[in-house]
Length: 255
Image (tube, rainbow, N blue to C red; front, side, top):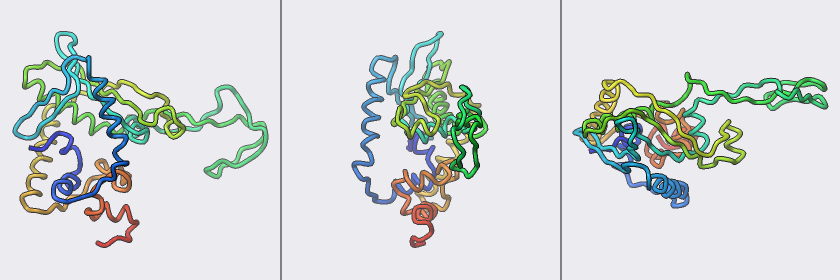
């Protein structure tokens, strides 16, 4: 029976992980190990931790069920790089006048080719969350799947939250993406039950069918592969996938 996390990945990705021998460089998992240790420490004293639930479709392990208002708050811990955090929040940069009124001392050209002049108020980058581009689907589906499973086991869930630790928080790379915090708690929307069960039922069926046939033809969607970034940098089995290989090699690999 697949896990919630497996079904959230693209069917092609999980099919290849289950059917191919692939190499993982140990150093590439250094941050994952640190994230796991950090995750365990956060869970030590908070309500019911690492509770695993299962149904006929898939299994899921929620990090914390914390007593609250006659029920439980379901909280999941994430340790992400700033790129993934920025995608989750939907941060979009805008150039605005410097709030302190600081001006340019001399004329010049910005990185985007636009010009500025001496005496002109400086333009500074301001990051704002845009709900229309925020990539919250994966977290929303994951926590709502846990919610439905927990409720079947008798837990009344009153709130969903994700606590994000930014792996490169405080570094320039994170600030350049608009991430100014190192750890923060965010609410997660309660989705309609039918939407959640429908998604996981469909994904479980697709994966089971691919495994039974011994082949998978459906590559990951843009949402699942993070507009190609996941294929290029974060997928361990991209070399076995036609789309992944094309994106990693710029079309120069074998088809």
